[in-house]
Image (cartoon, rainbow, N blue to C red; front, side, top):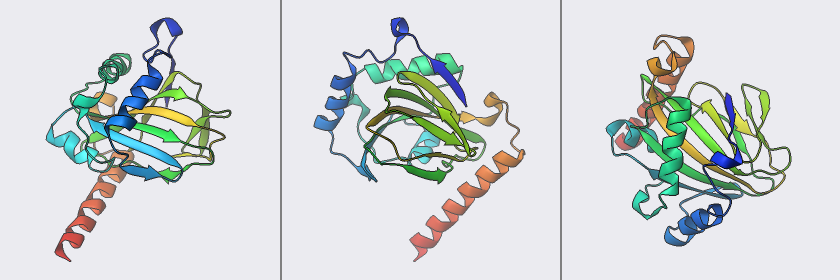
Amino acid sequence: MQLYNWTQNHDPVPPKDTPAAIDCIKEDNSMGDGSINGWIQAFRFTDTDIIKETFEYHGRDVQIDSVPKLFWTIRDRIGETLEIPVDHSFLSVSVMYKESYMRPHYDPAVPGYVTLKGNVCVKAPEGNGVTISKKFYDIEERSLSAIEVSLFPHEVKPVAGERVNFCYGFAVPCEVLGWDIDSPRMRRSKKQWDAIKAQEAVSLGG
């Protein structure tokens, strides 16, 4: 995982704008997918086949047009910081309340691609962080963390208080990130994708 502590002078989420951005989402769009204790709202930035397939497993579609331009600005800055293309991208705004958590998991990725999350921590409770491959990483408020979520297992332990993340997802060709398509982690990711599609085929057939 890569961590970037963006200074206040170049902060992509000015404190004065953050509440308005979140309130806009909550007022303009019904909450789709409820978490254990909190909520997640997801949006697609682009309309490519790759991101449509990737996004299918991250939330219900909501029109990005209704969201402040602030979110687009942050997305572009993440792309520049990580030096990755933003052609296939989406956003999940995640609000977790006290004691909420996420179990260890891998995110799906279209074969040949890596699902990379650039998470901007807007509000962090005490002891905030993420566990990746059983190693805990402390994440400070107003920082950016980059995680190849389709290649490494990750989880969030029960949080001590409200936690707000702007989770930007990117489907990135594996070679751009230096991964060989035949590497063990890429093969595991494809196996997961094939299993998901096989299960969907069974469900449709039933």
